[in-house]
Length: 247
Ligand SMILES: [Zn+2]
Ligand SMILES: [Zn+2]
Image (cartoon, rainbow, N blue to C red; front, side):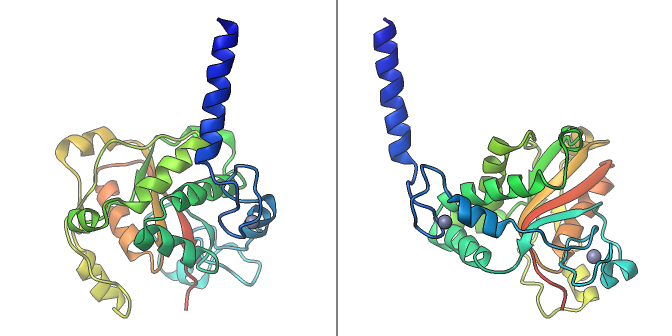
C-alpha cells in the first residue's frame, strides 16, 4: 500500500513539474520550476523611494510628493511593485492582449514578495478583503478574463489575504483618462462604480485593499474608494503592479 501511494505521489510530482516552466519567464535561463530565476527576481524587486501616500517614485528623500501635499486621495496608502518601467509594461501587455495567463502568476508572486517588505504579518492579518478592480462587463466579455482577478488569485497563494466575494459593479465604459483635466476626469468617473445594498452592508466597517495592475493618475482608483467609503468601509489601501510617475 505504502509503495503504491509513493508511486502515485512521484507520478503527480512529475506531472506537476511538467506543467511548470523550467525557464525564467524573463531571461529564459533555467529556473528550477519557478516562474522567475533568482537573479531576475532580485533585480526587479529593488528598493525604490516612493511617496508614502500615493506610491509615486520620489527622487528626494521626503515622505510625501508635492501633489499629495495639495490633493489627498481617499485611500490610506498605495503600494506599487515598481514604476511603469521595463519589464512591467511588456509583461502586462502579454497578459492582457496575448493571453499569457502565466504572467498573472508571476505578477502576483512579485507583488506578494514586495508587500512583505512593507507590511508585517500583523498588518496583513487585519485586512478583511482584497477586491480586484472590476472591468466593465462588456470589456471582460471581450477579453475573456479580468487580469486583476487573476493577479489577485496568484497573490492569495503567496500572502494570507482573502478575496471578497462582493462585487463592485463598473457602470460606465470609461474612456481613457489621459489628456483630461482634473474636473473632466472627475465628471467622467462620477458614479462609475456601484455596490448592491446587500454588498454595502457586508463591507461596512471592513478594511479593504483594492488591487489594480497599473495606477496612472489615480482618478479611477479614487472613484472606487469613494464608492467603498460611501458604503462606510473603514479603510482602503491600494496595491498595484506599477505606479506611473507624476509628470
Ligand atoms: Zn531570469
Ligand atoms: Zn504622493
